[in-house]
Image (cartoon, rainbow, N blue to C red):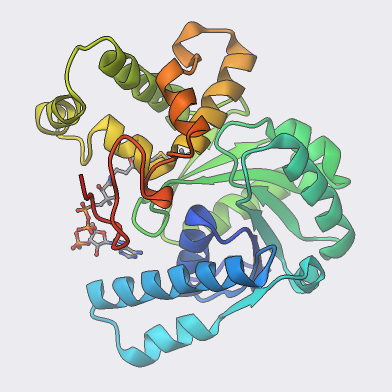
Length: 294
Ligand code: 3HC
């Protein structure tokens, strides 16, 4: 797949679950990647995840060692945001919090080149509000990847009210150059996928609370009865219960629709620090190898 015109270097802010997956795909597609984390420990962990993903993908594609090494060499980790000064496009994948993203975009506006596009990987926040806070509203878009970003072939491209035709076209072109299928989604909370997925996931928790089925039976029923790759409670652990709660609360605030109201069990698990696979505990127990342990 050829690279998108005018984009050579891509900045990625946040190298957690989503940022690491996005960094992997972008590097594999031939772009230079500068990935920023807030401190050395988080950066080390993030880069390890990128490297693991690159190795897995190279094995799957039977890629030569040199190809894998070339992709790895295209990724540079930094802790100083100012290092993104050469990026043609920046994708943020930080915490799902409007104030944090807005202040990041305003800082990026001062650092990134005039022509650079600022993209958010938000799942549910208002892209128009982020654009307004950025200082370059016409060059702000949403590019929403799905977890695991290296595997799932969809990107939702979200156009804020202020996004220019050119910035939207270039962003779509960039996402397509990663080998992704791009759908345009409106700037309404949850866009297309989460608008449909989040009520389903929350209903699975409500079904568990109501005793409709056990944890394992609810998951097996949806996996085997509907052909889903994983059951909803496993998927919640996979996405992260903290992220799922944040998304549900944002969507509930916007729509005031009880379908988006977070069930008490979700809130309690998050308060207890049981936030899913990344913490080792959620609806399930997870081993250090990333596999279910109970
Ligand atoms: N790079 C490249 N390939 C990778 C990879 C990586 N980093 N990680 C895994 N793969 C490949 C594997 O090699 C394997 O390839 P193969 O089928 O050719 O052998 C394939 O992906 C599947 O991996 P596994 O065999 O390890 O695992 P599973 O078959 O159990 O699949 C899964 C795992 C892809 C996660 C699958 O269970 C799945 O698709 N689950 C649903 C995930 C989902 O719904 N995600 C969306 C969440 S919503 C979201 O993200 C939005 C947000 O806003 C909340």
